[in-house]
Length: 286
Ligand code: AMP
Image (cartoon, rainbow, N blue to C red; front, side, top):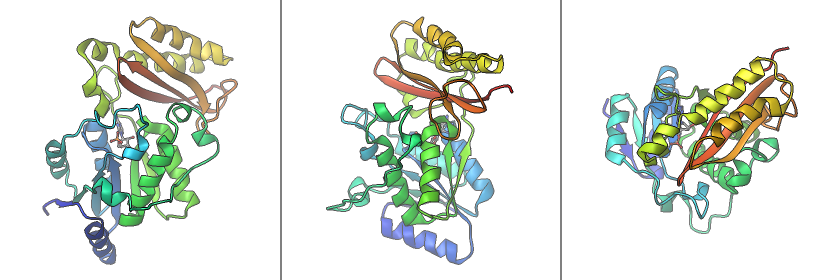
């Protein structure tokens, strides 16, 4: 069946409602467009588990800070539609900003606790509130059975899983492993903003996290022993700025005072004006 392109909230709600009435399992993949192989991995996972798949493309202004790249964020609507059609998506939902933000709107969804205390949160005030609020709206409009998110944005996936449970949405939140370029760089819409020299340097982010993971697996006993070599690796790259590099508990995302149990290594860097994030799960040896 041909993919529908749906712009109105009312039509999207009615379409999903019709599908649910035929007992179809509806899967949702929320994105900001400029689609790449990472997004398509989420679509493939949704496709396998659902009778109908909706992909939303919405560059959500409320999750960008005032000095962030909302205006510069890549927008490739024709290519996105082509990729999704080929991937067998049933509906592409393209709500307008004005329609998603009701006039006089005064409700936000704020996930509190340790999940939104560290990592990206202090550097992007309001970001996770913007993400949680828009995904709650997508959940309310589409009411899918399940939704898929990428582990590349591990903090976001954790926040949205918490939100879905806390608000009793009855929507299963699934995560998909990070899709990478052959040289290890995590696929990201922002990679296309990198200048050639920056692109050449960018895999160092993945390499530094791999170095830290190796230290954990090798039995490093302190945060310093885990993060030091990775930090030094990043410091060698001219023009690279580290925003954070952290070792946190994989479940709570609270900083791990020493390597123990299931952990997440996560980092954000700037290469010129482009901000890149990546992370890697690792388990400390007993
Ligand atoms: P975005 O369009 O960047 O907001 O991302 C939409 C969804 O795709 C989020 O759940 C991301 O975590 C996921 N995603 C983005 N890049 C990747 C990747 N390289 N591998 C897996 N999932 C990804």
